[in-house]
Image (cartoon, rainbow, N blue to C red):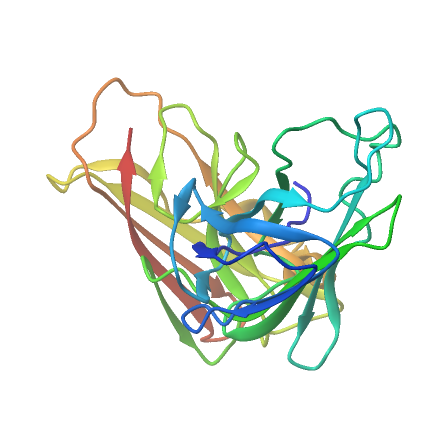
Length: 292
């Protein structure tokens, strides 16, 4: 499983393209745009193909930025040569996501009419919930001096569909992840046969002995009729004596599950508990699932 970068936001703004220079600020989303030699008819930020005006997003959301009908590029043989960089910084001005040129592989240019440029960002590791970030997108003409920028601050919140209780310990994130889509599950909808991971990231304060941690992890899933679909009292029972390397545990631990049954009574309820076998520390998780 590879690390993810990312969040989610959605909105649409309109403004005039009649001038060489332009500036606009959306008071709802706090998005500011500026053009110098390049202009854009419409900027859209999409979340799951939906347009939404907000600047607070759920951990794991994927956002697509769409810049529609950009004008002002110099052409060579009917092609234009755009550059687009994406930069996300945290509130301490540390860079957490950086792509110097989304269109770096288009050395021969692109031929589009109208010109629509897109970029995608996922608001997950190393981005964390409970924090604020600043995003900056720069677009430029590789065959001229034209440029256009979009900038906004946004907050990331944990998935409010997942209830987490902790005792004498802390963590960075708890979330569901789909191996099939390689994405964080934000709507708690899963598919038959889909391998789903319940992931704990950055768990802290569990007792460490000789660079080992001795955790337990229980998981039980019931249907809407309170019938047990899946149950395991300790998924880490094999590490009872050996323990888990502390560095691995502190980075990320998980439990995975999938369903191959033909029918199920939705919604399903999931309850999990990650506990320290050397102390009273634990993290309990409850959520509901919709199996499609």
